Image (cartoon, rainbow, N blue to C red; front, side, top):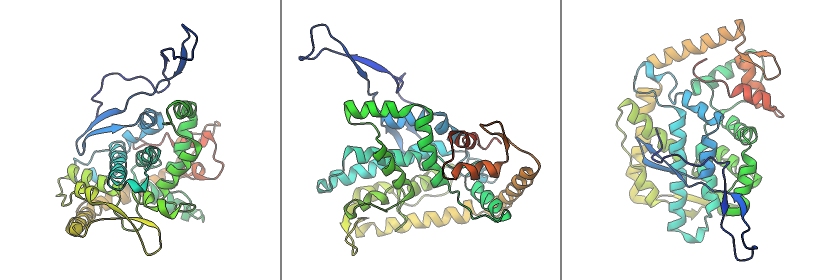
Length: 357
C-alpha cells in the first residue's frame, strides 16, 4: 500500500508565513505548517485520505510495527493469500470511521457533528488495533493461559493496550508539541481531552458520555449491534484475501444510516428497514468467515501448536531485553506493559514484539 503523493513535509516541519497587516514591515512570523491530507491506495476501498494528525501517528515506529503483525495470524497456512497485516486494516478502519461520521453529519446537520469529532473517530479507527501482540488473537490466548498458570486474573486486552500505546507513541515521538501547535494555529491538533475521547471510542466506554453523543461510540466498536466499521473493514478485507464471497454492501449501510432516540433516551445509529437484507448478508458473511476461515480445523491445529510452543519457549528462554537491562519472558513483557503505572521502558519492550519472534 503506497502513497499517491510525492514527498510530503514532515509533521515537525515549520514554514514562514507572509507578513500580516498588523505586523511591522518586513517582519516574518514562523508558525507550524499543517501538512495536507495524505492519500493512500487501498485494494479494498480505493483511495484513502488521512488527516495530518493520523499521518504523524502512522509515521511512528510503534504504528509501523503493525506491518509485521498479520491480520489473520496463522490462517495463511490454509489460505496462502491471507498475508495482509494489521497495518492496512487500521488504515481502512480509519477511512470508514470518518466516512460514516461525515455522512451522519451531512444527512443530519442537527447532530452538530464537529470536525474535531470526525478527527477523533478517524484516529480511533486508526489506532484501535495498535495493541495487538504477535499472531494477533493467538497472543491473547497465550496471555490468558499464562495468567491461569500463574494464578492471576488476566488483565491484558489488545484494546486496553492500544490505548496505552497511543499515549506512549505520542510522548516517545514528541508529537504532543506538534499537535498542540496545530491546535493553537489551526484548531486541528489533538488535546488531552481529545485523546481521552479517542480512547473511549476504542474501548466503547460510555462512562461520562452525553446521551446525545452516544452514537459516536457505535461507529468504531458497536457493542449493541455489532454493526461497526472495524468489522466492515475486516470482513471485506479478509474475504478479498482468502477468496470467500462477501455478500453485503457497506456503502448502502453508510448511506442509509441515521441517528434516532432510543427507548433509553440516548442517540443510537439505525438503518433503513429496506436494508434488512443487507444487514442479514453481513452476518451471513461473518458466519461464513468463522466457519470456513477463522475456525478451519487445520488453522486450529496450527494455532494450538504455536500457542504450546510459545508457552514452552517462554519457560526455557528470555526473549526481550528490558529497558532497564533485564531480560524478560514474553508473558512477563505483555503483562507488565498493561499494569497501571507501566513506564516508558515496559511499553517500549512490548512494542518490539511482532510475528518475527
